[in-house]
Image (cartoon, rainbow, N blue to C red; front, side, top):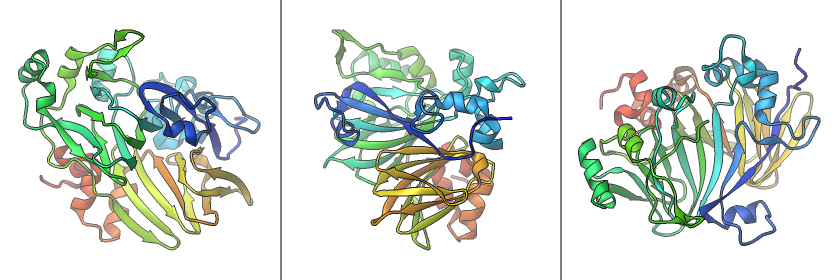
Length: 377
């Protein structure tokens, strides 16, 4: 028997100072030291703690370990426990990591491995696929996303050795509302002047190719040239941003951001009430981006949530509602999808074109959805 109640779990964000951090997150979370350069707010991941209630102070991992099936669900538990021995639920991991990123300066040029490489070379269960949803961007804000042309590994190594890496990288101007998917192997960097919601696999495996000559504690940060070249996706991108699929429902505008086998992300703009259902297959995560409202569940119980706050909705909770306050309520929702049952079929049933669905998984053959829908590029 588990002692974990079947209710939303509000989590306490962990704030991370970074060389490249800005001041937006300090204002959002009312940090007293106005000089701190907070680059990341880790909202939902294994080590963040429950905020309030009977389980105040417990980490999300401790909660999951007590009731992996109830919290993660069938699909989520499979993703979170795939590296665990049979019956060893205590080492299950929450499979997602959700952050807010405040880029006061450009981030390092970096790349992440896929699951197979992470397991074989790093002894870790997950590589890193991630998606950015741009919340704020100063005029002219840019990202780095892949290469200008197809590169060989030898050409990439030569460009790095000769100090010409910037010459072969593709820069892309971005604005609020843009969605960028970094599939494993994508060489990328977030530029200065942006606030971003980031949804990713639970992994902090990052290989740096270049760090703009910055020093940390008087020394350059470590670079990972060999690993970066080994895992880099060397083909250029035809499409750098995803075109979200927008669904209008009664009182709700639902914006489908991205969908891979690792995660699906949506933005819900709620004028009144949004009815939700976990169905036991996967947990949901909710992060409030704007406004005030509440999550209503069970027999009329409710949990108030305001901008910057996040909750995990256990897979076993079933039906719940997201209720807006006096103004539109903007909430980011994420979960681990069944791509056919949760994404492809419902959108096809709404007459969304197959190509529009496929590109939610990324550019060309990088898209899990494209392969499932058997669409040729």
